Amino acid sequence: MKKKNFVSIIFFLGIVAVFQDCCFTSECGECDLSGPAEAAIIFRLLDQKSKANLIAAWGAKYDSDLVDLLKEDGSKANLLEVGGDGNISFIIPDDSYEALEQEITKTFFLFLPDEQGNPGRDVDTLEFTYRFSRRDDCPAIWYETFSASYNDSLYHEGKFIKPIEFLKKN
Image (tube, rainbow, N blue to C red; front, side, top):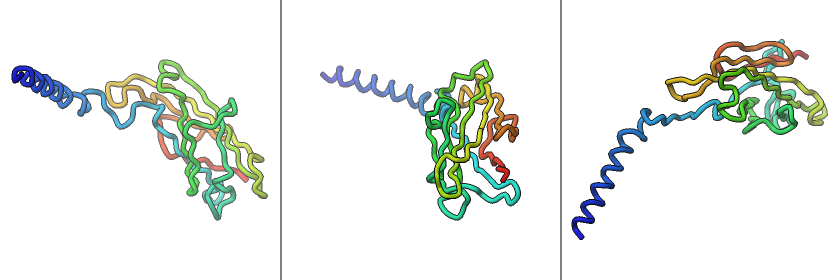
C-alpha cells in the first residue's frame, strides 16, 4: 500500500514539474491574446471641423444607444460594444486564420440616427483590408498589414493600431 502511494506521489510531482516548467510560462505558447480574432478594433467618430466626439450617451449629435454596426450580410459586428463615451469596439475577423497568406477586405456599415433619433437614417461605410502572418512571437498569428477606410477615405495603412479616429463631414 505504501509503495502505491509513493508511486502516486512521484507521478503527481512529475506532472506538476512538467506544467511548472512549460505551461505556466511563455514557452508553452500562453499569451494574453491568442490572435486577431480576440483583438478588438476601437474607433471614434469625430466632427471634421471641431474634432468633437459625435457619439455619446448625452451631449453629442448621435445617441450611443441608437448607433449600430453591421457586417455586409446584415449581422452585427463581432462582439460589438458602443460605449457611452463614443468608443466603438468590435472584432474584425471571424477567425485568426481567415487572412493567413492572403489579403482580405471586410466592409461594415455604421448606422447613425437622424436628428429626431430615428435609428439607421445615416449610413457610413467602414472598410478594413488586412493580411495575417505567422510569427515566432506571441501571439503566433498577427496582422502583417492593416488599413482602415471611412466613407472611401483612407485613414490608416500599416500595422494594426487602436484607437482610430474617423472624421465625419457635415
